Image (cartoon, rainbow, N blue to C red):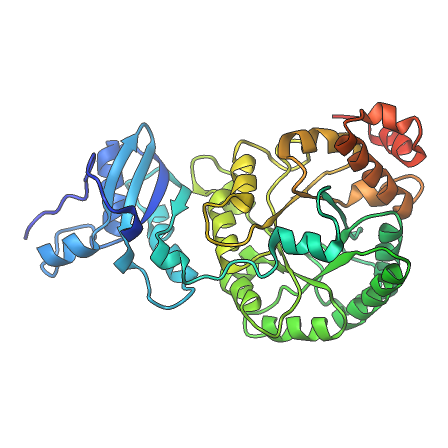
Length: 411
């Protein structure tokens, strides 16, 4: 039986005909052998020569190792390797991030990046609202959106949740949301919570303040669209989905359903299980690209190293991928959350710019004078940063910010 080499180092290809992936590879073998093992396993090969593989099949469908730079390997998969079904991200992931993680030839492998050809990108519609749409809804064209996560994560009743949202909005916040673990528990049924929050938002609107609250609808696949339609009917102005636990198809189903007329806030809970290890797993950058393709309007991207979550240079890649013009879709609102509080707002805006949503849970609820004052402190910190005034100086004339800085300090 004929032996085939998947190495095509230095060769040129038509990038519009291939899905191009970058992998960081750790191996005791030569990097060439390891990269060939990935290309073979994920396309036309297996652990031994096979009589059913011929030149035509190999040339048309075999993956190509195009470049090796240190431990970074670039592999191109022919577009024909991927399903013609519109929106088949499960199958895409089976190819570019499937069995390779179990290969004995690899001590570790991390999918760092992926670029899709136009033929695949056009299968997706992207965000229905995007960053621009969210700004339009909130009538906030330039400054960062400023939000909160209802705290404690679980335990509040519908009435208490609605009161939290009202207090946060009265303090000036533009956004709030359920936490990722709250969906439809006995102590806070989703119907009762959604209706109560809707009343709070309507009251804020009557008082002249626009605000969105994202209701978490993360549930089983066969029920998620129905639940989204229900919470929308109950008054929800925005919905939230945990993309890793629910799946990319869930986000896409919601985004492409004509009956869903509210923005989708995408949470990334559980992503750290495969993004945190620098030598094994999948980077957040890949998740960001897939969420934008599927139609998420807002996405948690990290805090660029200033919050409580692990931060690295990858957060900047996520930020740029949400907002750049490389993908043929509306932009996604980057959500910066995880240990946010007024003392680090200026640094975050310096790092990320103003086209972001700053989301604080404890940084609002933990204010010594309550949620409304905590919201005011966050908004004052944003106003100071956008005005080019130091937090210390601004706090001299803004009590709520001063209390927050006295409580948590700076970073």
